[in-house]
Image 1 (cartoon, rainbow over the protein chains, first blue to last red):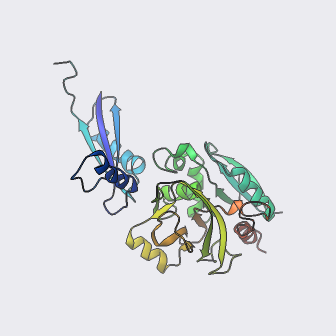
Image 2: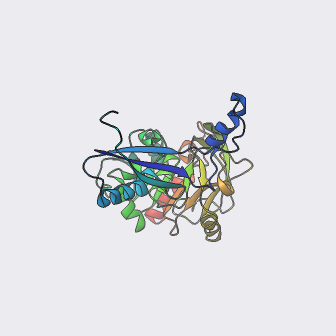
Image 3: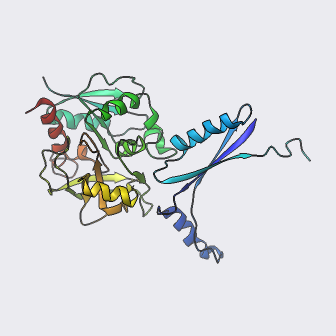
Length: 88
Length: 226
C-alpha cells in the first residue's frame, strides 16, 4: 500500500479570509515576521496496489474533477515515500 | 394542464418544502425528486433548493454535484431544460460547471441572514421574465458560502453578455466580486442566485413582501406559453 498526497490551495489571486484571520492572530501569540498565511487542504489517499503511471493518472483526474475546483484552486499530486515502516 | 416543476432533495437540503410551496402558490405542480433518482420524472423544469447538501463537506455543492440525479439534470440542462439554483443549488450549479465561477466563504467569515436588496439585471431569462430589467427587489439571504468569484476575463464576459442576472444593491453581504448575486448561462435557461426567492412569496412571512414570486410565475408562463 502506498500513500498519495494531494495538496489543494486557493489560486494566488483568490482572497483567503481564513488565512488572513490566522495571519492577524499571529502577533497576538507572539509570532512576528509572518507577512502572509494561505490556508489549503491536504488529502492523504491510501492506494491499494502499485502507484504506477496509470494509478497516478487516475488520481490526477480525481483531483482535477473532485478534490479541487480548478476554477478557484490549484493542486499538486505527490507519492509519499514508504519510509521506515519496519521500524528503525 | 399546468407545468410540472421538480424540486431535488439531497441529504442536507433545507428548503425543498418551501420551494414546493412557492411553486404551488405560483400555480404550477411541484414534483419531489430524490438525489438518488436516475431520471427526472419528465418534469418541465427543476429547482435545486437551499441547504447544506452533504454537510457542505469538501466544498459547498461539490459532493451533491455527483449525485445520480445530477447526471440527467446536467445533460438536459445543456439542451434547454430550465434549472434554477437557489443558494446551495447555485453552488451545485457552479460545481457542475453549468454556471461559470465558483462560490467561496463569506469574506467576513460569518453566517449571514438578512433581507437583501437586489437589482434584477437580466429580465430575459426563463426565471426572471416577470420582472422588469433594473427592478429592485427585497429577498431574504442566508448563507455561509456566498462569495461569488470568477477570473477577470469571465467577469468581463458575463457583464458584456448580460449574464449577471442579479446584483446586490446598497450592501455587498459577502464580498462577491462586482456585487454579483446571481448569474445565468448563455441560453438563459439555467439561473443561479444566493438569495432565497422561495422565502418571499407570501405577505405574511419572509421579507413581508412577495418579491420572490415572479421567479415561479415567470417559469410557469414560459412553460405553459401564456
